[in-house]
Image 1 (cartoon, helix red, strand yellow):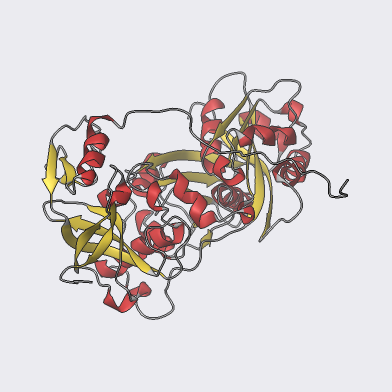
Image 2: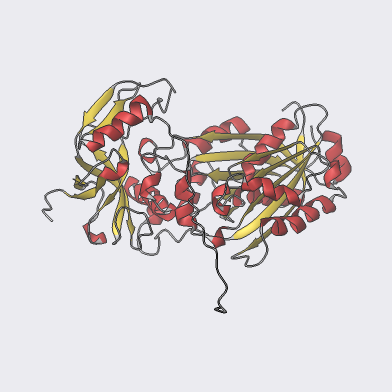
Length: 151
Length: 310
């Protein structure tokens, strides 16, 4: 007999045991990402909002008109993240940015793989870097990179 | 408001990190102090409401466990908001408009030192387009600070030394006792009357909002009647946000007392601080503010006055 006491070990996964539909708007956006197509939605005031929302942010009306936008655009504001934490898009320093894609009127939150804070400035152009093996998730859009950067 | 409501007592506790006591153990002395200041026990309270975030404790309905700090028997009339305690106070003020409920206890608590607050707060964001990126709270605040610099309207932020500081991580609890009309006058000689209170919310998508202004604060201030104030107590999680709030509230040269406080607690703590200011004669008519969500997404504005109810 060994003197080491037996230790019981049990797996415990915290999980959400329901499935739900992402619906016709968010679902279309996520499905589009799988196909490298970013979609927005036209608001009551004519603006194209990206990512699309189900209800108008001003009037709360239902929104329906999905609009394809480009996968490159302009940084409208940014902040440098010198110490990425677990789960973030990149594990090396990067910039958070709001990116106003070509054809859109609002910025979407994304990571910009700029390498160095000195590369970042408001108004700079960036282009999407897509994941391989896309599944219909916001993570299909890995990050943005400086437009023209062939890295 | 049909019935005048006053803050009649308060107590709070804050520490950078509470290593030993759990949430209930932090709350117990704070609630006892707030009730004891005006000679009350939980049995004298008509409505109890709290503000906290279950994500901080890491399991669903964690807030229910905090009820041990007020006692679960005999049954009480009780509610909770998954927000800063200031928004729980708003619910209490509304409940106190009903005949038959004359007193309320509002409390808030948080112990974010146990986890990674910058990550935990990401769980409150859009679950499809934002939360899967795990944006840190400080990074989002940085988007606002940069937008303010780019706007040209905030020269105070230009130059070195204006980087967004780390997210405040502090543990703490706060409790506030409310009472209506004559009940408030019985309980204290110095009630802080809530002359107006309102809260407004902006769209969750940061790119849809103008981050350099606070439309929701301005709207809430208009609804609350926040004019002619001689001091302000602002809930400011990141320093640059004070500039946005000063503009939104049209503050000019009044004294402004800003604090972040523990997440979920800081806003209610600022309402309590404003009540203390009014009760102690530091201000005659004060505006108190609380915020919740990224980049000042949701804002509450209250107007407090000393002296007797009209």
